Length: 100
Image 1 (spheres, helix red, strand yellow):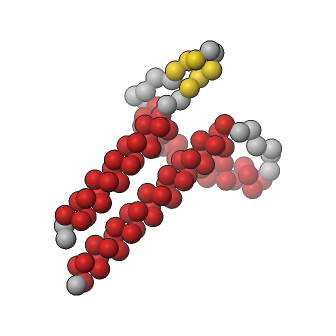
Image 2 (cartoon, rainbow, N blue to C red):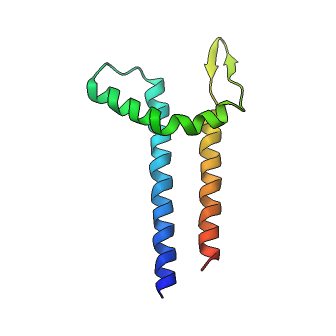
Image 3 (tube, one colour):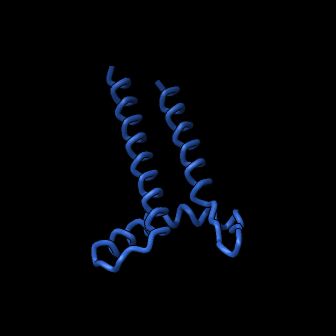
């Protein structure tokens, strides 16, 4: 009974962590596309997103080349990062469930 409760709690924690980090990646992408007016709070939010998401994205930017389409740079690292994050999330959930 205690083990089942531990497994459920761990799965819920991993799920919330996955969704929060996914939301941070999406917010980082949106704030990098849209030029925001300078505001102290917006600057702090952008800096927080940069500090949290950019180290993870840099792992993929080293491997993936930046595409140049009509003179515009297209960064595919967030797409690949989200796909890898989803795969790791699923594998962790399966591993936690298999431990039960």
